[in-house]
Length: 281
Image (cartoon, rainbow, N blue to C red):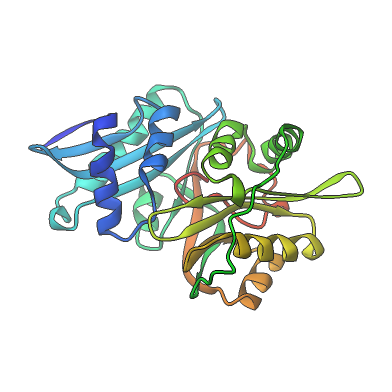
């Protein structure tokens, strides 16, 4: 087997793996990793078959994300995942990235702790299962360049680094799932969405209060035509959890945001209801 840098030709292999384990990523998501960090995503190859992956995503020179540590179920318990994870860490260390971050599942958390990662806060994954009706509508977003510019500026402070290019990509792929709310000429909230392999994913989601969050969630659910919706909400944010429960979402699993190195740019997570997703932060 060979561990090497991931290329465009490996994207289908990556989608095959995340499909096998029930993850929601599409080819567009793998493209985002490769575009952001061409030399920072890796595969384990057995002959012509991709049997493992690990991806990184750099956010300026402030911190980088590690995600998509996947192993073909037929190749597990051979140390492939650990080898890929260590290679991703080595790559980021070699670039001088001061801080590494990731969102860990309960199963993965002990390994990350051994590698020097510590807990920052907790995130709950919520899932809505429904029967989509013909009433679901994909409306034109009507989001202006000025709206997006203001959203990117706010999000930079909330997230801790500039991810405008990533948010712009979300808007370009699913403009009808981008919502921007204003009140008295002030930004009161925003939502972005992704059409994943089997579900629509809501996030990032910002709302200054329940009076903004409630209509945002209702509008997103109306615009989505999928039977399954996923939201990864901050456990410390009572607005998000209460509204998701009211709308039939059920908590599915716990994620733990972890970091290694100085947490110099923690952002303002209290100003957000939900993250973009564990693969992007």
